[in-house]
Length: 125
Ligand code: FES
Image (cartoon, rainbow, N blue to C red; front, side, top):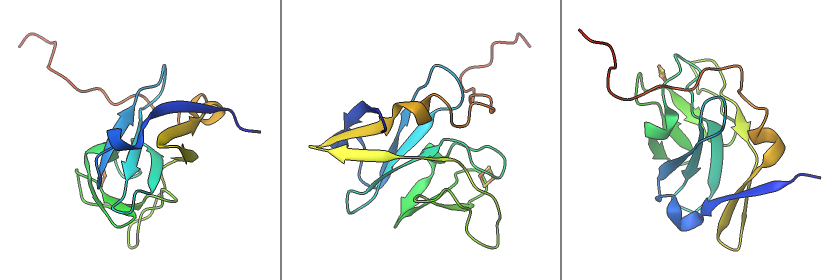
């Protein structure tokens, strides 16, 4: 039986938008909310070159990657033809307006990838 972790309220995820979930290791998890309030969770890492899917455009049950516009199915993580590849998906449960993710999946899926690093350059030029 799955142990579920409360992440946020459904209303914390913008309609046709996303929210990122930080983990202690590995890339973040991207939560997506569709126009009809379905919620999906994918590793925040495009199967093409690792772009942040959470920054993409949600349409229908898909997201367009912000880097090179691959289309990824939210329910499977599968890239749409003619592109090929798949990003990991996470189980989601929405109950009484609360969005929950599976504890075991959060602790295990996608840990082989480095977290996406963003922010100001720290090197002196
Ligand atoms: S990294 Fe997503 S389409 Fe290239």
